[in-house]
Image (cartoon, rainbow, N blue to C red; front, side, top):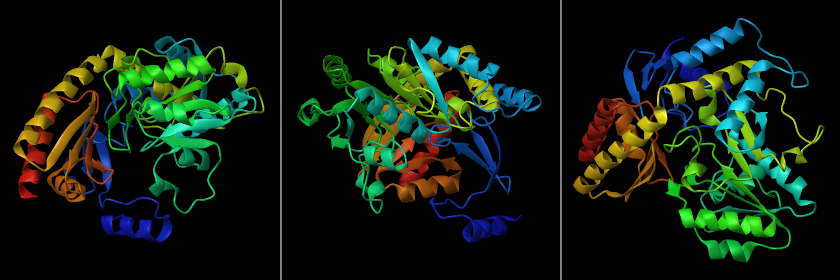
Length: 391
């Protein structure tokens, strides 16, 4: 198919649920993508954090090929080896827990909401935060503290209270005898790369302990090394009751996971929750390869070093261009807040072969792969510099 035929097929046959960039990619390796006309692009926003290893990492590709040759699917009422290994690895790298496998971040967050209600025995209210993003299903949409995503889908699911981020007094004021959990992202991705204060998170942990409430940490974007540690909660000196994962865990294939403290993990029993394709053979092999690659290639160290380097280079741009208000984030999850809309800047970057994102209208979002190099960072920053001069 030609590019024109592909765009026409999308227009005629696919529901318009995404704002499309008119690019057709056919090949990827590391932090580079090639379009249908063989033009190369430097990818500094690989799939909302899906591509923490970049595109087509050899360890992931080999694991998938090996499993596809043996067996693709068996239902979850049977046992299988890759899922057992992945669960054991995840518990090893986190805390005493059990895991639930599903297919996406929204599905993992739905599971956390259901488990919380079951745990609550009549308590059902969950406190969430302004500018959060937890998914597109009705319950996770209600938990998402952004009205623009909720409009037109009323009535929303009852039982959620949204309060100001990093405001412990607002949290305390929202708690009632019906409150069962607090749910948050430690770095709000879609909300504009807003970072939770360490003291705030630790106070949330204390409140939950005191009131027998659950602390749910949504690590769909921050998990699997994005912030320089394998999981973002490890920066905060706390352990969540429930952690939700997705995106980067699958190395490019769809996966979701709920990691639940062992003492409450049996709250959900047979018949109360399930996911047909959750933790399938192929995806579990891919996820295991992701964890191996991160450890063997020392990508957490690289993410920390390259994150620091990228912060320095972006702050140099801030000193140079008054249009930049602030550079913030953690590790390789970085937001560049502007005092103008960012859409035109993103479009100009695409023209020059640099893929980035704009969220919250004025925040440029950069989330390069954990194995990014100084050379590629320099190239990306130089391209952004050129664009800002033109704008």
